Image (cartoon, rainbow, N blue to C red; front, top):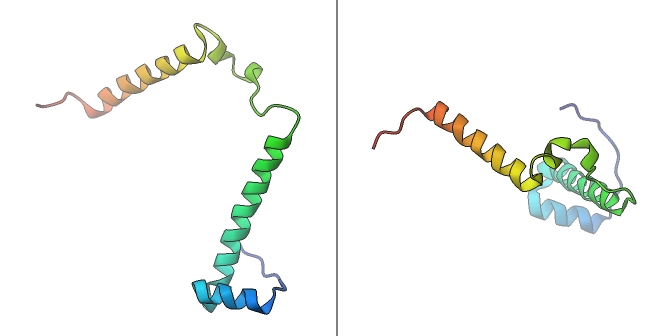
Amino acid sequence: MSTHRTHVVLPENLVAEIDALVGRRKRSAFLAEVADREVRRRRLLALLDRDTPAWNPDAHPEIDKDGGAAAWVAKMRREWDKASKRRLGPRRG
């Protein structure tokens, strides 16, 4: 991943607390981690705050056929079990 150098102004006492937690040499990594977490949190909040629903049943007709979501999940699990048995081969007791 490429990086971009930027100038950020922080209160001196906050910098001291960050340094006490992670050390001066890890300050940028810490701030990047915290900023990434906050960006994801705010995007999720914005998604939840929208008037339109996040799930569009019209985009997933396979779930609406043949018994609904429960039947679809059961079918997926059966297919997964069959595939797992093929990958693992016969069990030896």
